[in-house]
Length: 130
Image (cartoon, rainbow, N blue to C red):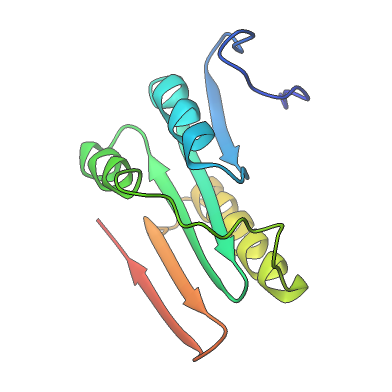
């Protein structure tokens, strides 16, 4: 069942979830979500974007290689651009469509990539499988 509440560590959501979908504009909040939910959900889906570039992650939390790959993506300095500061609507639509395609793929038993990166600037895409 969907939880229609903002996540904070002060008010955690109890139980086990099929999906946690992260659409946040802060690496710190993203790290908190991952730390809290990585063992409380089956799939952790995360989207990140800035202007005309996005990354989307589909993490099978039962797969240690997926978990390690995602944990590495949380290291380092956050990108200074906030997605809401400078955004183009088609980037929003592309990243959200990609995240929804992850949900569809996992529901029907298809293989989803662990990461999709796409740049609208040069029309380059990469997909990573683990």
